[in-house]
Length: 135
Image 1 (cartoon, helix red, strand yellow):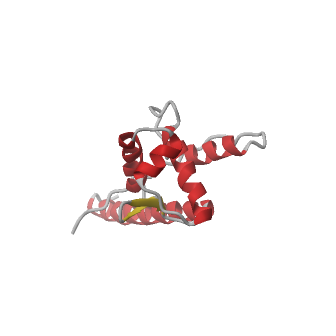
Image 2 (cartoon, rainbow, N blue to C red; image 1 turned 90 degrees about the vertical axis):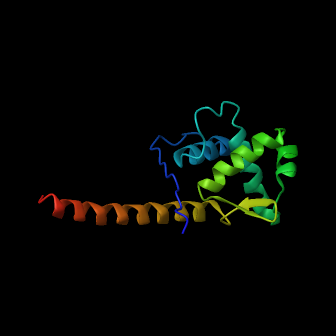
């Protein structure tokens, strides 16, 4: 049985005060820890936006199609796709990629379920450790 690891990062920061959808989307994604600080040109964010836009049309895109739309090399796109797949937000089917969810609220719900599962496991282990340590 393969062990599935998923890194969950939540960053608590102030939401942008102005009504700029691009800034709100960046804040949303950064709050979920989707993008690293090394992504200076926001290439992973741009890729995520392409996948988000494809939800409306129901399209599943190949890495070549995504690369053409964001103006990045296929290698860079595949690197970011693997990161998003590892986070559980993107799925791959027959060499195409799409978001695992149908909207952003479902994305938050999915992350919340992962956090709750992880917290339950941690609580169970903590109780066992407390018993063994006589705490």
